Every structure is written in structure tokens, then in C-alpha cells.
Image (cartoon, rainbow, N blue to C red; front, side, top):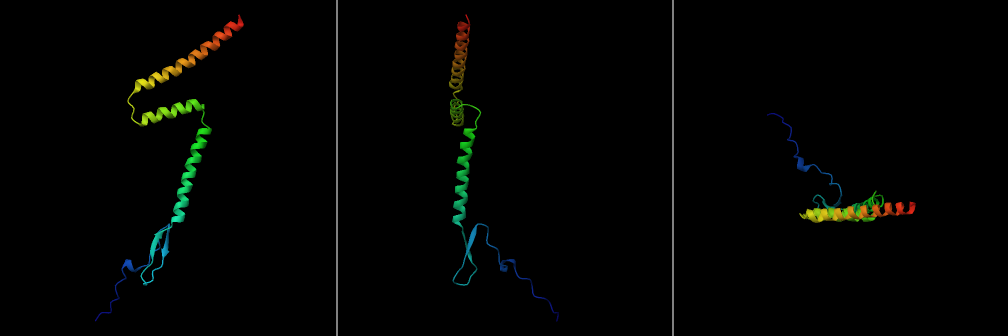
Length: 118
């Protein structure tokens, strides 16, 4: 009676592009292709991230504004804090010892200058 058009094809029958980072693999039975990860590109990306992280750490340590001894002390203190060390008194004692050593060094320099000037 009525000449109706055929229903549209379902979306599943439309061929899809392979996802990024994958390589289409042909199948021998005529079914649609299967995709597998491109391990060469994945390995290259991972190596680039690792090299970038190492180079960034090296550059950060080389251009740090403090001396090596101060930097090591700061790193050690941060690692202790990350481990959840609740022993604040030990950390305070270390800080006070460092400050006292610096003051003694300055006092000795001043006394040497005063005795040299007399």
C-alpha cells in the first residue's frame, strides 16, 4: 500500500576508526579487524617521561639556591616528615644544634677580628 523507506542501518554497522595508539590487525576470517596496542610508541613515551624526570631532578639540584649540605639536610627532614615521624623534639634539637654551630662560628670570627685589631 504505502511505499515506506527502509529503516536506517544501526550504528554498529558503521565502520569505526581504530583508537589512537593502536594498530589494526587484519583477520583471516573476514570479520572486522582487531586492534592491539602499539608497544613501540608506548615504550618510547614511557622512556621519554623517565628521562625527563631524571633530567628535571638533576637540573633542580644543580640550580638550587642552598648549599649541598643544607639541601641534603632539608631532603632528609622532608623524608622523615613523609614517613610520619611524630618526634618533633628530635627535629627541633637538630635545628637548634645547627643554629648553635652557626652562632659559634660567627662568634669565633668576631673574636678573631677583635683580637687581630688590638
